[in-house]
Image (cartoon, rainbow, N blue to C red; front, side, top):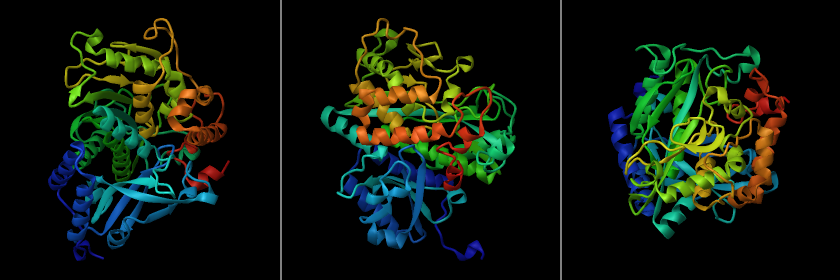
Length: 476
């Protein structure tokens, strides 16, 4: 049937950008939730071209789930949306499977029709337990509550900006086909900043950047990374929940654009040995009543005593939270000192092998960069663990804490052991959620070779939490 017969909403990229930035500004200013709900419901009612709403939420491991609701149904039933939580890995058991989905009306996005389909808008959901409370396994809800409580109690705003690296490979579904091919094929053999106009990697980066801009990302810079076929597309910082949402959207956009080009965008931390892996450098800062309290022009490295205390707590719990920041078997290939791996539990302004780096900054940009984060980790868990630890975590009595040569685990089993033994991770996640997360990580690890060796094994790709489907998971 001809598309001309449809009257689905299809906006220009400039109109998309204007609408998304207006919504983003209201969210940044912490506008009224009730007013946001009223405005979005009015939009859905009045905008005849909107046919469906894509509701998004993330499981415990950080995999994004999406379901489409017909607009007419949603307008009648938005406060009573239920789903089977037992079908989501890491959520409820079958005997207690009913969960609800609330809508975060401030996390609403108009999406380009050429990549997401005409007549659709996107919104992030909040998982709600049977008793109406936020579901403990929904780390987005946990992060949102933590951030909101700090703002109400102490006037703090948690900000984050993430530099997310990935690889672009030849062919669709390259990860799922790895069991057949045993390799990934580069689309570009250049390197850092090296590409030509019109080559596949440059075209991909340009298209992703355009979609991001249309969705209100406020782009900063983009470029090929050090490894062949590797990319990084940077955008501005935001309030912590919005920042985590943008990580999920960033990866979704990259995968969607790559698929339309007949390629695969992957966020495996180390899909190819012998070249640099992919990280998700996590830049964080804290504002109090609009002022960046990490900045001190007279402080060591020009950051404040508060910021150094934040750093010390991260270093103290570095081994304990490593499994939350590096969530897969493959992630531990990246923590290799031969490739600028940030595996040293130290803080430095210059050493890129340090877990925490102190970038050059000013009153506006002063921040702390946690470098030892894999791009395949749950962004809500990452930002929750970094801020919760940095603000409230314990400080170890270790001489020369910021320079003492200690190292992060080089395999998931050691990381899991540290995570499971830690009292602090229990405090953060609660015993039940911690146990579920640990079980998921062990189930993946047990499907893979214990020794990483010198080649990427099929199971560490096939059973990766961002790659698996039900059929693959059961072929063990």
